[in-house]
Image 1 (cartoon, rainbow, N blue to C red):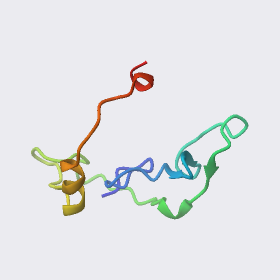
Image 2: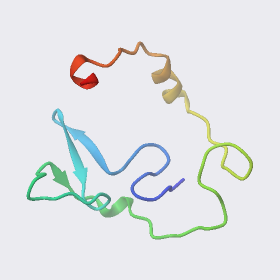
Image 3: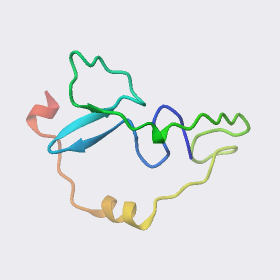
Image 4: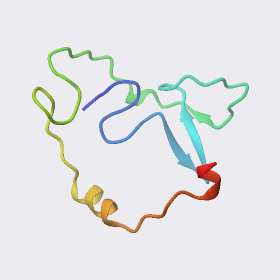
Length: 89
């Protein structure tokens, strides 16, 4: 499912983690490259097909019906930790 703006329905293609930092995909997101240097460009995720015949949300009348896969369900059952003090601030 292509939501547009780099969201393919299974996460964002607008960036990825590389060696401990987040890098932005400038084919999908617009960042100021003079300020943000951790960027890359992957245009293969761009799909210029426009579909207006359906709603693009999960569930409810008219929406798509998508459920988590086994891997996503396993992640959901893992131990999670609360936000750190830095994140809360």
